[in-house]
Image (cartoon, rainbow, N blue to C red):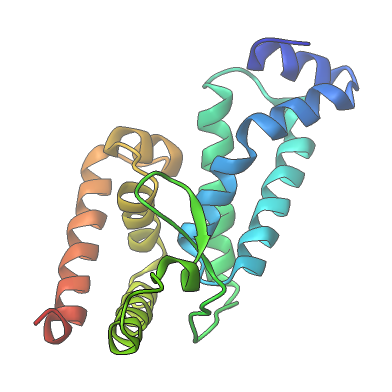
Length: 192
């Protein structure tokens, strides 16, 4: 069993499918988390996940080790998310069956995050907040939404996001500032 990405990539380039499966298993949760943070439908997140690893498989023979494999993979993930948005595949609702991540990074259905002892009014209010935040996120440009999701939902540093998106730290800060300002404006009447 290969212990590092470089060995796995070289074995995959020689046709070893087990090595590719190990690479997928090493990064699949992070790719799915990024995709799920970007789209509101778990089926769309799964589509993005599949497309990412298909592109990785096709691109591995030409991988040149100019960057870390993870940086290259997350750049592909970012590009697939952005192109997914541009194709216009959007959903106008937030399902209570949709998976969300808690503070520990554990994924749960939105309906399961509402505690049993919470009143029905509170559950309705919580669901309404989730829907409003989801709608507000959809008003962001694709790049603003990606930066905001990577920073606040996935916990990446600005420098890491800049590498993934092939832009400067300043550009990432600009997108994050604009996204935050727009979300504040969209949600200002709801914050009280």
